[in-house]
Every structure is written in structure tokens, then in C-alpha cells.
Length: 428
Image (cartoon, rainbow, N blue to C red):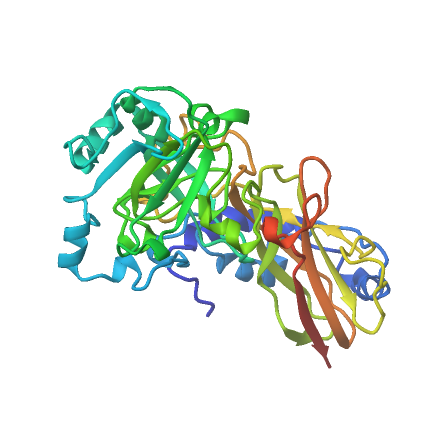
């Protein structure tokens, strides 16, 4: 008997009805379809009953939950030791607990901004956690976002982030003029060499362009308090950017008249102003299967700032050399995969239901658009059986502007977008 992983029964039920759309022509056309794929010719779709698709039903059943449990997020942290690993008494001493956390907001002494009321620990005006929650009663927002590292080829996790818009905190300082940028950094062992910092234009903090969520000072993930590994008690979250903009263990904000960034990531030849890209990757793909056996594949797509129109898949025989002048696989035999519709059970949130005031969702708890920007989406495809040989499977996104991955920004230091290649061996 096939065992469905805990928590995925609802996901399987929701998507089982979709499996009838995933089949390439099989049955009597199966041999023709296999030969066509091997030769690189287009293959038509068919529409058999869901009961005829056990391979794909099983693959979909094994999909990860849409929202990632906090404990399942991949961890990318800096510091020696990492701040969340400090002893409890040290965390209390340096403000890494909700009871002792304080945020200073000051002017840059070397390039001063004009502030009416700086917020400092020395004069007792730094923002504490209770004060942050009081602001949250009036201003708090929640939004879905995939957290991704600029130079890692898979998301760290997909979550609902909750906090207070940064602008509502900055207005408390009574800013007046000479403010062009916002610098911020978190606790890093009282060692100047370990400080990890980032920055944003002041205008981005004050206004949300293109219907983006606001930049927030964040204290909850999926409805639960941020733990230390996720950047708690408080971190920054910048919706459209990679993780290096969402600094953990937030402790200081500096308003400056400097016009340029001071991000730690600048030292690594990184593009500091590159928003999230759209790209696809595989979650499940058989590495070996029998000749003629259908190939069930699932994956996810990160939906970047340019949105997502479709996901496509291809499989090519390694016996046929690839064109040397086609680094982006534009001449591969691409076919549309199925982008899965929103799940009924979102996972990692109470009862699998999104909160009522989640940005981007309607009153019934359904996404206003799908796929959602700055998020992830699952996809699936069932390919016809193939003759004996070695093949390479690939997937790619097509964004809403019609750009095929890795375009329009194929350069590595502006965010991952390379097309993944998976070797599949077909044996007799």
C-alpha cells in the first residue's frame, strides 16, 4: 500500500482531479509518443481518466506543503558564533529575547539626516518589543513571501511574514530632510568585523510601488513568534528582494544622507538592487526507470518580480549532441507542464487556512491572483515512456513578459536563474 506523508492527504485530494490534464498520449499512441520525444518532435496531450495516472498521483502526494514550517526552513546565518546559538543569559544581555530587545533609530553622524526625535537606548527612547506590538495593533500587516538567497539555487522556505511597516517606525523619529537612504543591521557578537548590514532607498520604505507589500519590521512567521534561527526576536523583511536585504536579529537603523548602499553583500560582487527572479526546479524526478514507463515529474517555480506565465519541461537524448551556441536551451523541445492550482490546505498555518487579513488574498481566503508574485508554485508533468538510453530532463519558467528562463537576467550575481539539468537513465 502506498503511504501518503502526514499532512499531504488534503493536498493529494485537491490535486488528484488535475492529473487527467498531465498526460501525453499513451496507450496505442505511446510508442509513437516515445519515439517522437526521443527524436525531439512535438508531442500532443491527451486526457485520460485520473485512475490511469497512479505515477503522477503518487508524485503529487509527496509534494511539500505550500507554506514551509519554520523548523523546515533552510538556514543561512552569519556570525561566529551564530547569535541564535548563544547561551540564554548572553541572549538576554544583548537583547536577543522578546523581553530585552530594543531597536535604535538614529541619524548617520558622518552624513547626518535631520531627525526631530532619534530613538536611542541612552535616552530611553529606543523601541522595545512591547512598543512594537502596540504599533502592530494599528499597523501590522501579513503577506506571503518566498525567502531566497541570492546565490543559492533553491528557496530557503515559503512563509507568511507579519510585522509593522518600517515607515511607521521611522515616522516616530520625526524625519525632516536630508534623508536619502536607510541603513540597518543586526546583532553580531559586538564585533565590528562581523556586522551584517543592508540598506534601502528611503523612498522605497515610505512608498510601496507596483502593489508591493511594505517593508516590515517582522516578529512572526506563519503566525508564530520568530525563533532565533529565523532571525528572532525581530528581523527585517523586504518583500521583493533576496534574503540579504532581510537582515536577521535587527538592532539598529541609521538614516543617512548618503546616496549609495553600504550592504555587506557589495563586497562579494553582488548586484544589490536585483529583485527576485522567476525560475523553475525539480522536486521529484526518477533517476532510473524501465523502457516505456511514464516519467512523473514534479517541481516548484519561484515567481519573481516579472510574474509567471507558464512552466515548461523537456527531455532530450544524450546521444544527440546539443548545439554549442545554445547556452540557454532555447532549441530544446519544450512542452507546457501543469501549474497546480491553489491548495485547500496551505500547510504550516492553523487548520491549513490563511489568516483573514493576509495581503494578496480575498475575504474567502483565496489568492487574488495565481500564481502569486514573490511566492512559489508547484507544477507537475507526466512524460511518455522512452526507449533505452540516457536522457536529460530540464524545466524552465516563462514570465508574464514572455521571457524564458534564465532571461531576462541570466547573470549569476544578480540572483539564481540557471536551468537545472537532471540525468534520467532508461533501462530494459
